[in-house]
Length: 115
Image 1: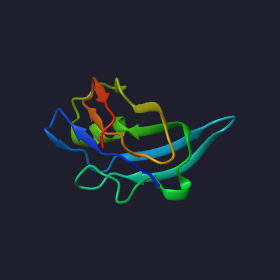
Image 2 (image 1 turned 30 degrees about the vertical axis):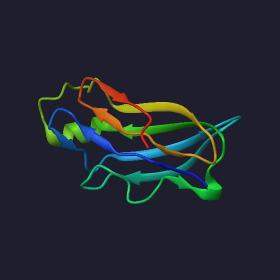
Image 3 (image 1 turned 60 degrees about the vertical axis):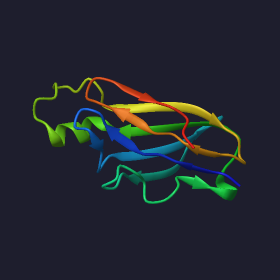
């Protein structure tokens, strides 16, 4: 069985992004909230967002509340923030492992499929 994990790296400050709210949704006929977490000091959720029987082939969205994170760190961030909630939509197979990291600054982000 597979699992899905994530972490957030703050490219402006050069380290993990702690305290970022994370939500995982399954996308189908409805948008179903599957998990929510807050990134730890290492920028990761404490456990996989989904694993084993909860893994189903299909489309998903990860939401990261980066606007709140950057406003807590630095008062010079634009008001309103350019990036507020970053949404990544992707698809998975049930029997594989997926790691979807977010590399983010107040003005840009990127992601990739990790292992």
